[in-house]
Amino acid sequence: MNNHECAALLRKQDNILLVTHWRPDGDTLGSAAALCHALRRIGRTAHLFPNPQIIENYIRFIKPYLAPEGFVPSYIVTVDTADTGLFPDGFQGDVDLCIDHHPTNTYYAKNNFIRPETSSCGELVLEIIKALCGGLDEEEANLIYIAVSTDTGCFCYGNTTSDTHRAAAELIDYGANNKLLNKAIFRTFSAARLALEGMIYTGMTTYRDGKVSIAIVTLDMMEKAGANENDCEDIASLPGKIKGAEVSITIREMPSGPCKVSVRTTGAINAADLCAKFGGGGHAMAAGCNLDCAPEEAKEILLKAIDEEWK
Amino acid sequence: MNNHECAALLRKQDNILLVTHWRPDGDTLGSAAALCHALRRIGRTAHLFPNPQIIENYIRFIKPYLAPEGFVPSYIVTVDTADTGLFPDGFQGDVDLCIDHHPTNTYYAKNNFIRPETSSCGELVLEIIKALCGGLDEEEANLIYIAVSTDTGCFCYGNTTSDTHRAAAELIDYGANNKLLNKAIFRTFSAARLALEGMIYTGMTTYRDGKVSIAIVTLDMMEKAGANENDCEDIASLPGKIKGAEVSITIREMPSGPCKVSVRTTGAINAADLCAKFGGGGHAMAAGCNLDCAPEEAKEILLKAIDEEWK
Image 1 (spheres, one colour):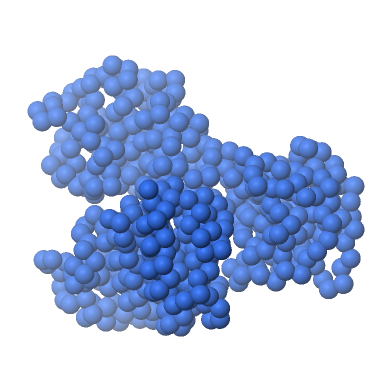
Image 2 (cartoon, helix red, strand yellow; image 1 turned 135 degrees about the vertical axis):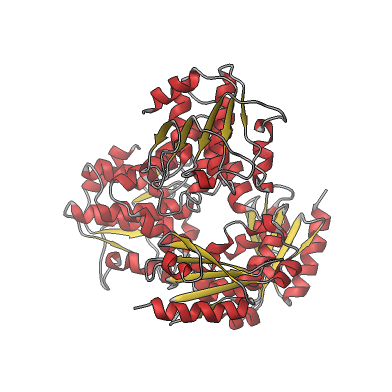
């Protein structure tokens, strides 16, 4: 299916529900909201499934698109959702159309518009809206800019291609206010987040001649910083910032239950294999698991497991 | 002068010295080195003036282009240098050609290729090399990518336009390894830098209901973090990251002499006016001055001056 066929399919529908994924990020939210706006622009009733996990940073952009209570859809579209296991809490149903860029997509929908080579789902929605409406308005350009820029870390992550930059150029020409959005999303942080980040940096430790970096985030640190879940976005990337780190680990003490462990690697060891030892899983370069002990003890257990994995 | 005229002028020259500005950043260095490489590629002898202030992060990219001792140029080109006051330490001489994007450029050279609407000097050199050689090779694409990406904070600063993104797309298509360069320049930091950043975040204070943020960097913090000048790049931007800050101030205790003060504002007060009170200067939104006292005392003096300025 190409973007024109996808647009033609959507044009035939009405009462459309757009579904974002579990723990929604800027890409799933921005893409779904932009498509929702475009569908409304051509006269369709369209709403976003009210994903209960939308964080504060995004809620103000997304609010106008959330479905009112009692909305009964006749056509269901998932956006940026690779697998039915990633459906948001409270959603179940047959999916008519899936728009996604994950190589792991399981083709669970009746129709699928999947482009695994694309850095963000936003770039697919950009092409669909162009086919649907002949172009984007400012609101759609802003929403897709949020999608593209957040999924590529403001064009800094390794998934950024020349096509990503061409999409960004097009979105700015359609009126996306990249200056304002970048400032809001990438350049300002809550005082609590900065305080927490400060504690993480000062407490970070390295092992194996700097090749392993470990950050611990305790409940005590969260309280001292005045931080909550809204202040913890992408916190697992922080220990990987240290020069020379090949394996970076974040251990979070949780209010209840075991510690949450995130493992990122540059390829030195397999993160999924390491986490599988403790009943966790994920990808080769990013995985997670739980450890039911104190954070310091979790660190010792993980360091030992890394020693075993590292050949 | 357009890029073709500029290329034609350069083609007539030999023994060309390319001069970067005082306290060289990625834009002046990447632009000058890329142009140097292109000039060598068409058979010219070309070198960079050995700017004594190049920091560690850039020296490895720039080394192959530095002029050998005793090089006598017959044509001098400055790159990204708005004013003769910004010449690097040890350089004096008549400038034949100036390539620059600063609106404040004083047209001090015999010939001037100035585009004040462009976000980086790298974008001008991209156009010049295309006119000079018909295209870029990988090395030139990498060097100009460094120029463009550093001057726009990896496409995150307010000066980023759709043209910037189009230039980035072109550079990646010419072979720039944006993945590797972004990781090296924007995503990894020395342990000392992260430790210092951590201390700055935890020690940062706000005033006037969060509208003023102040970071103090003492010699003691530098020592505890194991940090030196290489770890302090763009450190004046850190207090401005806090949400709601309209005026952000960084006070650095120096090994000898007075404290160095940097002021950044979003427009609430005029940074240059504030700094002028203490014999300093700069722009409306970014300025600096020196204060010959202890950092905590400097903070009190500045807070009082801000109260007077804030209407």
